[in-house]
Structure formats: structure tokens, C-alpha cells
Image (cartoon, rainbow, N blue to C red; front, side, top):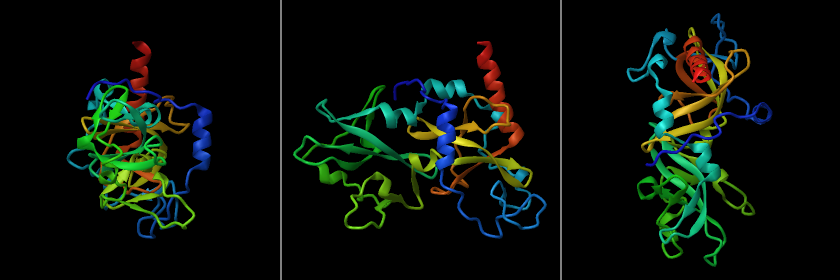
Length: 277
């Protein structure tokens, strides 16, 4: 995979506020999992208990300490998913442009499973969506090449993989990518972009920021780019390592295995370092 500069890691305040205002409300939590900081059991969307008796101190063995996390290496070889969705065209094997990237499908560990593309329009067909396995995709700095043509189009049907299916819809509704759902083993890039990120705050999770991009590297989801909310003293987005465990695709929150001080300090240190370069 060729190197590609990360683009649009910073969102304007206006766009961020508009997106936050229109975001889906948090999904309801069970009484067992939802409690306020004093343990009374009352619902509080900003403070939901970390699973476990002392989960604030529990770390999975593969959690990277942010003091050891090198974003320079990440940005040198990583690719912005936001850039792929907005700017990278899809080409056929003969070199003609045939469509655009609509989504990327990951399994829960972060491995890329497939690319969803909208293709056609000039094949005597209406535009249609295809699902192309990642191992059949060729990626360069400005294009994605797929082995899809008019003859083999049925081989890349959207609903052939078991991890993608159509949502129930009326007969008048045309099924497009936004009408898809993923199973328990997979999720789409757009399921995670737009979520709210939370960090550990003692034995509860607290609201931290907004996910506005993802970074993929070597065929897997490497980082989640978060813009911390006002009040944390962080003015720029920061790319935190992606962890598959604990994330429920389709929920309104992405919970990171870091305390608020560790998460904030890492972002502030990168800002200071960038300012001196």
C-alpha cells in the first residue's frame, strides 16, 4: 500500500456543531450497566459504569500506553478513511473509472473485510452497489481498482456475504448502502465515524469527544480520530489506537481504554510538538 497523506483531520467548528446537533441520541443502557458516579443506579448518559468491579484499573494486555503511541509512524503509512470515501474513485481492470467508494466493512478486530462501491451507469444498467472482498482490491494513492465488470457484476452482489443484509423496507424504497445492516462480526466505517468517544473516569465512562475520521494501515483499522469537546484544552483532533473489544457497532458510543487525563495529555503533547516543528 502506497503512502498517502492524511487529509481533513480537522473539522471546522461549524461543521462539528452541526453534526453533533443532528447526531442520534445515545442508545438506552440497562439498569445494571447504567449508574451515576456515586453508584445510586440512576441513568446518566455521560457516566456509564465500566464493566467489572474496578474496570478503571483493568487494561487488556494489548492496550498501548499513549506515551508510547507514535502518530508520526501512523501518518507516514496510514490512510484517511474520510479521504477514501470523499476523494478516491473506483476503476475497472481496463483502466476506466466505473464508480465511487461508498463504504468500507471491517470485522470487529479491525481487519478490512470488503469495500462497498457504487458502479455502473454506462453498462446499460442503473448505478448499483457491489461488495468487493478486500483481497481483490488494488489500492494506490488516488484510486481503487476492482475486478468488477458488466459480465461478472452478479458475483459481487451486495448481499452475498453473510455479514451484510438488507434492512426491511417498503417496496417503494430503493435499497442503497444506508439501508444495509451488519451482523455481529462486522461493521461499516460509517457506523463508527460520527460516534461519540468516551474515556474511563474512575469506574465510569465519561463523554470525551466526537469521531470524525478513521485511519487504516496495512489492511486494518489502526486508529480512531477524535475531536475532544470544549473544556479539555485540546484544539486539534488526535488519532487514538483502535481496539475492537467493547465496541458495539450501531451504538452511539465508542469507549476507549484510557483515562481522561491520559487521553488529554497525549493530544496536548502532540499539539505542542507540532507547534515547535
